[in-house]
Length: 206
Length: 79
Image (cartoon, rainbow over all chains, first blue to last red; front, side, top):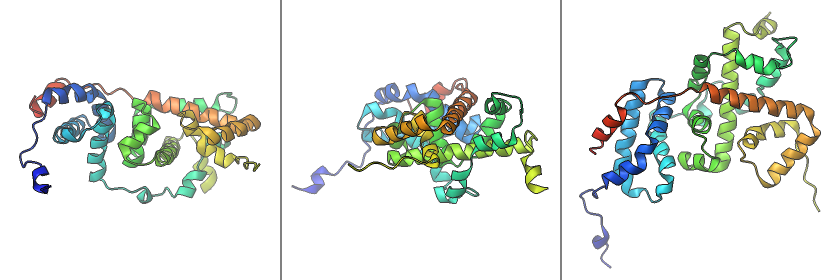
């Protein structure tokens, strides 16, 4: 058979825009929420979402399974972000896997014992953080951990859907979520030290 | 029959979040549950991991769409 006969035409295929809108616009809010939590800025987030929609429109003919529209859109958005800041899991400063693995916020709080008579020591410790501090701690996470963590926490994606978004095996999703949470625990501990909520640095350095 | 080695506390802790996300199954789930039945300390740690998750979930915050954004997106994609 003449291979040229199967060659796609140079003209892009006409896209059924109303079908595109019908499938993708229901996820606009979720895409904006992710973009906002990745960029930390509403204008930058809107730009990112717009770029995502334009890319998605071009790639629409390649969407095989409409059931997976949500993870397909998240994938396009997160690729746009990670392509901009190429960080591999090895490049994360100060988080050697072993060191991070040993980090335990649970133990640090228990050792520090900031509420000596409390029966809910750990919960009371967490309750001291302001929303903005938690959001800042999340912002400190490299995108490869932040994207799955946010999609899990805010959108409730399953590990399988996350694997689809991140284009990696479920086992990798599992380890990224574990590491992401550990880095977040560590960021919150650092924040507690800066705010003087704990005195550990005194004990260690004096 | 070969007996599977019981999980150490360090190994168990590494599985907590996957357990809380209901992503563990089969042998991995059984080993963790067996460890939790025998280790009170890990039960406390697991309970902290659950609190930590709930804490972050409630603090991630809402992100309402900016006014007119849907219209702007429709315009950008030429709809």
